[in-house]
Amino acid sequence: MDSVSQSGQLFHIEVMQGIYLISCDTARTPDHGHSLAPGKPTGNSYLVVGEERALLFDLAADHPGIRDYAQHLAGKPVQLVLSHGHFDHTFHLNKFSEAWLHPADEKLIREGMLGIPPVDPCPLLHPLQDGDTIDLGGRVLDVINIPGHTHGSILLLDRQTRTLLSGDTGARRLLYGSAGLVSLADFCAALNSLQNREFEVMYSAHDRCALPKAHLAHMIRLITEELPKTTKRWSYPGFDEMVWLVHGDPKCLNYFDMVCPASYFAGKTEYSPAGHHQTV
Image 1 (spheres, rainbow, N blue to C red):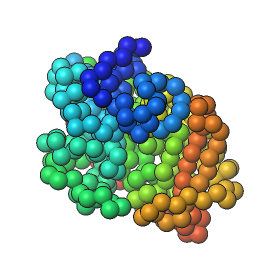
Image 2 (spheres, rainbow, N blue to C red):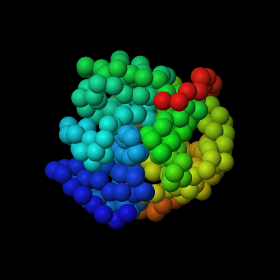
Image 3 (tube, rainbow, N blue to C red):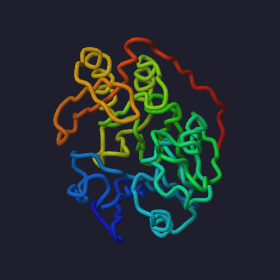
Image 4 (tube, helix red, strand yellow):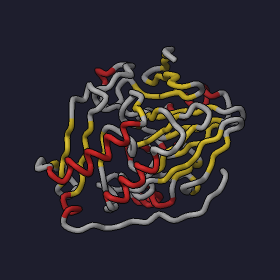
């Protein structure tokens, strides 16, 4: 699991059997190198290889050659799945003919957000819902939708290695409510339920370190106990005023950095996901 391969700026590391982290030397934090240690934010895609086909989760490594890189690494057809519709997870999406994501986030891709133009040309978008399964041949991934970061945020659970690819949901850095507010109580309840799923570690989009399942309980505690008391504020063009919770040191595994609209504490907007189950 410690082998590292390079191709130009892109590189990959096999973090679990048949699961490859793909990133870029210059992705967000050029001084981070190829380290898997906790530290500054990075941009990571993940390639999961089955017997018949492979799945590329997110386009968070900003490199125009990522499609060909993943195809060459897999040696078989590659299906693109997006954890959500934010621009930093859809780099060079216009080079793909089709992609799968939760329909609640299609608008972010088709219309853009925060001054980021829509994807052009936009590939054919296929829906994924909570409870769907993706069969790669001898390897099945479960689709889990947890609204919060966006309404359509999904995670993928690899049954074979008991690994959760958690996108921007189960993470050390959480931008909350960026595409519409979701009840924090519902979000924490979803994280609590997630702890009952059969996995041992998580890999997120903006950290290369493996996160233990216990990180979910850590997130829940900080969101419920510390976030309401936070007085620090964060601002960014296009966003309303945000409450900013920072816990710990980025070089430590228990670090947690979260921003949430201050308006949440004045009035909440609930969101209840609904959908059918299917096998893709």
